[in-house]
Each structure stands twice: as structure tokens, then as C-alpha cells.
Amino acid sequence: MRVLSVASEAYPLIKTGGLADVVGALPAALAHHGVAMTTFLPGYPALAAVTGNAKVVHRYDDLLGVEARILEARIGEHPLLVLDAPSLFTRGGGPYGDATGADWVDNWLRFAAFSRAAADLASGVVEGQDFDILHAHDWQAAMAPAYLRYAPGPGTPAKTIVTIHNIAFQGRYGAEIFADLALPDAAFALDGVEYYGGVGFLKAGLEAADAITTVSPTYAAEIRRGEFGMGLEGLINVRADRLTGIVNGIDPAVWNPATDATLPSSYTARTLTRRRANKRAVETLYGLDRDDGPIFTVISRLTWQKGMDVLVAEIDELVALGGRLALLGSGDAALERAFLAAAERHPDRIGVRIGYDEPVSHLLQAGADAILIPSRFEPCGLTQLYGLAYGCIPVVARTGGLADTVIDANEAAIAAGVATGIQHDGITPEALSHALRRTFALYARPDRWAMLQRNAMRADFSWDESGRRYATLYSNLLERA
Ligand SMILES: Nc1ncnc2c1ncn2[C@@H]1O[C@H](COP(=O)(O)OP(=O)(O)O[C@H]2O[C@H](CO)[C@@H](O)[C@H](O)[C@H]2O)[C@@H](O)[C@H]1O
Image (tube, rainbow, N blue to C red; front, side, top):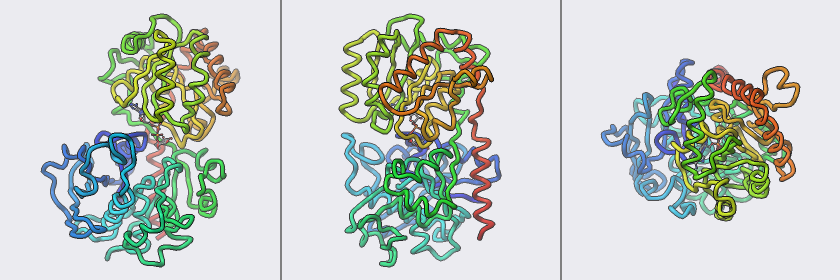
């Protein structure tokens, strides 16, 4: 079975968040299940390293008005196709915006063209490229199923899946762009690409896809409600029979404390004392006091989704209770300023690094005692999975994938020997305060804390089971044909 995985990021080539980790891990995860996956990415400058000598498999004179080529390369051991369209993708800044963080004004064109090319690949336009399934991730790829529905190429169109990694990002534009999408007029319809009078990329994909997935069962249920569906709950409910939640796995080649070459000290569940050297390295890097109390970490986009404003409100209490905090992240300017101000108030107790740093994120998971994830919504969440694997106990809001992957350390779960973290209900300073106090109480009992760490590290979040579930979904779609 051949699958084209279409996404705007993939680790290790280009990453701004969890989407990249998942897209980067899927080819290996699916290979175990007899699926040959090719990844399709936009040709950002960061991809130049792998497209240097790439073979050109297709040329466009006019892909929604721009010149472009499709290049054949590799991502690790797996096949990669790249849309080389310099006028759309060769620019500084990030994949979605300029260096100041402002979105590119032509994002609709960039990702419509990318999706048009994906639809071409999935319907026989490009010789030698045949796919049974097109698997589109998030709004940037979601127009691909819509193009296949309304304007496919000459071959049998692939079956389609749209995976929602975050329904908050929808790719919503004014009606005026419709004329430039090269779609038939009939596509501008209630069950087509039209969305509240404009054009909705994610909406169009969810209407057109043969199957819809999201990245945890709880989030799949949550997005059927207004509170989480962000305007798409009606559509999600109508198509609920096509929706499943498949929890993300973690890539053991990248996230394994026993083999992680970026760490000062590698370790396993049996050699937890070896974590101490990593904790000392965190203290040094962040200029924190050296003591035996817990170090909390945050590795996150600093946004409202992630509940960071609530953490700001609780930060002085965290310090008053004897905690320290090592934060790595970037995002909303006001939140960045608030965390930096907290670090100024408590220079020896709070360290803040604004920015994006992959090796530091590994060190924090390996050296901090607990990771705080007070998200208002969390489709799956990966940092709690990395925390579990590294014995960095997740303290999380009971929502989405966080609810599905962390087992709260209540007395029953402790007695049964299955607890892996701490959950709180509601994203309020009071709820977070209560969770912090519970964390301190557990940490004060070294036997209990070590048990939590061992349980966490032994929990299985490899891709085995989730890979199997995607493979089954693909097979079912083909059988339905
Ligand atoms: N400053 C920094 N420096 C280095 N690394 C950093 C960093 N800030 C974040 N990261 C890394 O970026 C990733 C973030 O993953 P999350 O799952 O938290 O998702 P995100 O909200 O981006 O993604 C969405 O998609 C994913 C994938 O499906 C879902 O898990 C999630 O719920 C959903 O919101 C992790 O690998 C983390 O270590």
C-alpha cells in the first residue's frame, strides 16, 4: 500500500511544533505494517540540504499562477517529494511567517498550490508516482482532498484522510481568494470550500475527506462540542461516523533516555540516580540555586492554548513552596515578558530561555523533575509523552490527549502501581495551585516519586499500536472502494 503524507513540516527537516514530530515519525511507524509512505513537503530553504541533487519528477509552468517543480529526495531512509516553488517558499523567516512572526499574506496561495500539487500526485498526474491513500495533515494540506474531489487528475484518485492536529488553526480566508484557487464554481458551496461566507481550508478538507482523524480519542469527542470545535463542531458531528482518535506515539530513535546522545548522563528506569547529573546541568544552564527540591520545566509555545497565563499567576507560589522553574519557549510577547519579569523577581529560582532549542528541550526532560502542561485544550500533546519516557513527571490539565496518556496519582492508582503523573480539572490558578501542592507532597516521599518515575518510563507510547491503527484505517478505506 502506498501512502502520500502531506504536511507543512516534518522533523528533522523543518519543525515549529508537534506536527513535525508526528509527520517525521509516521513513515517508520507505518513501515512495520506494510505501508510505504512518501512524505510531501513545501520547498523551504531548510530543505536545500536534501534537495541539492534531487531528481525533478514534474514541472509546472502554471501552478495556480506560479512556476514550480516536484523534486524527489529522501527524509532519513524514507522517500520524500518536495514542491520547489521559489516564489512561494524561498524566503527568510519561518514556514508560516516572517522573522517578526507575522503570517505571510499569501499563505492561502502557498498552501493552496501545495495542496493542488499533492492532489496531482494522488491522481496520476505525475508519471511514476502512484498512491492509494493521500493523508493530509492540518489546514495547510487540507485543500488536497478538496482538489481531488472537485478537480482530480486523469488517474483513479487516492482515498483521503485529514488528520486534525489542532482545530484552532483553520486556514480561513475571504471569499475573494476563491477565483484564484482554480476550482469549479460548484465548489463554493455549503458542503464544499465555503465557510461562513469565505473560504475555509480545513473545513473544505473535512468535507471532502473519506476519513477524519485527530490525535487522541478524548479530543475526538471534545471537538464535537462548541467549546472545543471552534466553529467546526456542526460539521464534525455530521461526519462523526468518519472520525477516529489515534493517539500520537514517540519516536524512540529521537526520544530515549538510554541512548540520547545529547544528554550529559544517559539512564534507564533502573538507573534513575544517573538523572542527577542532568539536573545539575539544568541548574548550571539556567543559573538556578543548587538544592534537592524539585525543578519544574515548561517546554512550550507560550500561548493561551497552553494555559501559560495561568502558570504566570501561580509562579510566585511555585517558588514559595520551594520549587524552581526552568522554562524554554516562545510565543505571545506579553507572556514572554511576564515570564522574564518572574525570572527577574526570583533570579535563582526561575530561569527563562526565550527561543527554540531542540537539545535544551532534551536536557530539560532528562534533568527536571516535573513538566507543567496546564493546557486549555490539547489535541494530543507530545511533551507529556517525552516527560513520561524521561521520568520527568507530567503535571497536566485533564483534557484531550493529556487525559488519555497520563494516569493521575490518586491513592487508588498509587496502590495499584499504575500512576504516572498528576492531573488537574479546570485551568484556574486554584486548580494549578492544588496540583502543585500534590506534586510537592509526592516529591517529599522519595519512594513514591521513584515509583511514579518508573511507572512513567515503562508506559508504552511507542508507535507500534498507533501505527497499526493508521494501517488498519488505510486498509478499511481501500476495502470500502
Ligand atoms: N522552545 C522550544 N524549543 C524546543 N522544542 C520545543 C519548544 N517548544 C516546543 N517544542 C517542541 O515542540 C513540540 C510541541 O509538541 P506539542 O505536542 O506540545 O504540540 P503543538 O501544540 O505544537 O502541536 C499540535 O500537534 C501535536 C501533534 O499532533 C499535538 O500533540 C498537539 O496537541 C497539538 O497542539 C515538542 O516536540 C516540544 O518538545
